Image 1 (cartoon, one colour):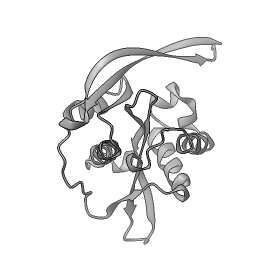
Image 2: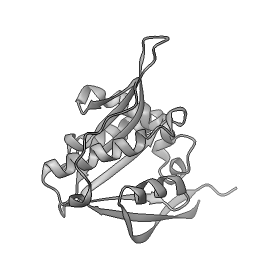
Image 3: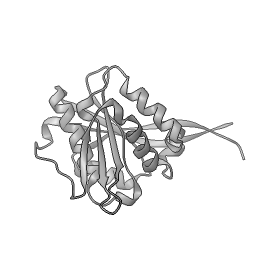
Image 4: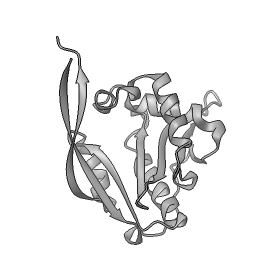
Amino acid sequence: MTLTYFKRYRMEIDLAEVPAQPISLPSSYRFAAWRPELIEAHATSKYESFRWEIDANVFPCLGDPEGCRRLMTEISHRDGFVPAATWLAEYQDEATGMTIPVGTVQGVADRSGLGSIQNLGVVPEHRGSGIGGRLLLKALQGFYDYGLQYAFLEVTAQNEGAIRLYERLGFRISRTVYKAVEAACS
């Protein structure tokens, strides 16, 4: 085994600078507030969002359906889990009548009292409609309502689209970190 290092940015935001506003999704989409029975839907959305992305290399559990299920269960049982900062975006397929999970975000208050965004993801077929930004705003509002003043997230430096979104919403890079990942030698 050999180690591969992924460059990541820690990005932070002052929640007082996030404008309070009604957050709605395009028609055919809806938000689902956290409920334990949504673990499977969050895990499915997480897997579909990340399985072909670089983050599945950084965090291998994101490239595995069972790994996403375990991760979602673990996050929801953490001390500091913030249900009000945990949201699912669902798509109502009019042709089939099915409701499909298409986006997910989870929030945890860390030991120092900061909101920590976990695994914001939107499945590829539903990107470009503003769903990711709206999910993130819902999570930030949840942190603010929970009484937190600041929030942060980490993003892989190669994920330029996500970085642009986060900066547009007011996040600023506060530091660079490196994530070591074991990789099989070829």
